Length: 107
Image (cartoon, rainbow, N blue to C red):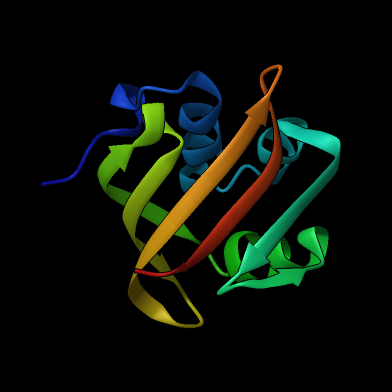
């Protein structure tokens, strides 16, 4: 069963998933803290390059299956034009309504 983005518990994570699914890079970037970082499968990556390559230039889309940690930890079926669909885990660190870090990888 999929959780609609509008029903996600954490408002910042809700906005991030909504921006990803809308293909709205600017809305997503606006949610990031100025010094935000991210990791993919345990390795830190260049955030700007990664979101372009994995999300916004390849029509990334999240179908959230579960949430925990107050809505800041998600398991989602993530689809993009490069890799197809994969089950992924996402963990967001949110400070003052901005994402300071997120980590993702295969679930």
